[in-house]
Each structure stands twice: as structure tokens, then as C-alpha cells.
Amino acid sequence: MEKEVIMLQIQDALVSLDLAEQFFCCDLDACLGACCIEGDAGAPITQDEQKKIEEILPVVADELLPRAREAVENEGVAYIDEEGDLVTTIIDGRNCAFTCYGKDGMCLCALERAYREGRTSWKKPASCALYPLRLTEYPTFTAVNYHRWKICRPAEILGRKKGIRLYQFLKQPLIDRFGQEWYDELVLACETYLEQDAVNR
Figure 1 (cartoon, one colour):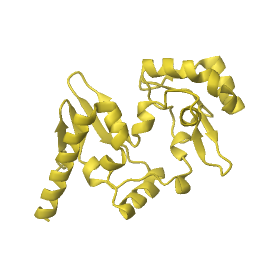
Figure 2 (cartoon, one colour):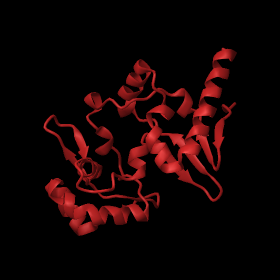
Figure 3 (cartoon, one colour):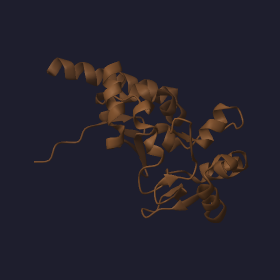
Figure 4 (cartoon, helix red, strand yellow):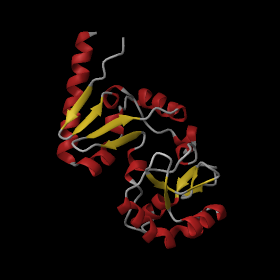
């Protein structure tokens, strides 16, 4: 018998209970930003985000790896993957072309670094800011789900240690995507669910 899938409905979005139940806090010292270089496709982006990246490209081009710079020049900043999604260009079959590296070997996003240094006004694709959440758009609603990946196990451990749940860790990206009112409703729904779950145990 299959386990019943329960979702929280927040306005026009169906949200996985993982956002309430799962502890999460990125531990870059442990993973070194592996989500930027693991996987078989680039980061999902919108056409508007593709245009943003194209506008920013002259600012960050010199910071990209030589192979990445060549790939972007020859193939563009994005492509359509096997599932029909628009995603950022990758190199070596996995590395996001916009990954650069710190002195400690940690993966950094060239787009985000330029933003943090005040050289651009746009941070990075929403799918990157919201990770490990994945959004799927349907005609009448948006599905918000937690993408479990073994490389994020250190983040789950650190999140539990600090008592930070997924919906709390991603507060600002969720507000940026859905708005403050939506996020406030999510918080209330998560807190109510957790309180009821504690009582029922």
C-alpha cells in the first residue's frame, strides 16, 4: 500500500511537508559547494533569467574557467536539456559554466560573487537560490518539493544541530519568489502542522 502524500496548500502552491519536517542548513565547509558541479544538467532558468545572464556575462567572463568561457562563447549561456527544460550551460557533462573557485577549493557562483561585490544588480537564478527545493509549474498551481541529494547530507545534519528547518533556511528566497504574505502563510501552516504532529506522537 502506497503512503499517502500530504501537501500544504499555500495560495496557488502545493508545498511538500518536507519544508516543515526537514532540518537543513548549508554546510559549505563540508560540501564545498558541490551542487554547482554535480549532476547531469545545468540549473533550471527562465527565459528572463537567460537574458539577465547574457547581460551580466561581460562582467564575469574573465572569472570563468577557460573551458567554460569557450563553451559559453560557442554554445550560449543556456541550452534545452533532455527533459525539455532551459538550463545553464555545463562543461565536462556536469559542471555549471558559471562556477568559479576560491583558494580553499570551494565552488563559488561567479554571478553571485559579482552581485555581492556590487558589480551587478542581479544575484543568480531562482532555482539556485531556492535549492534544495524544486518548483514545478502546472496550469493551475505550483508544486514545491524537496530534492533529496546525498551531497546535501551535511546540510541536513547541520540543520538538525542548529534547529533550522527547511522553510526557515530558505526564508528570503521563498519571499523573493512568492512574496511576504505567501511566506507568512507558509510559516503558520508549518508551525501548526509541527504542533499537531508533536501532540499526536
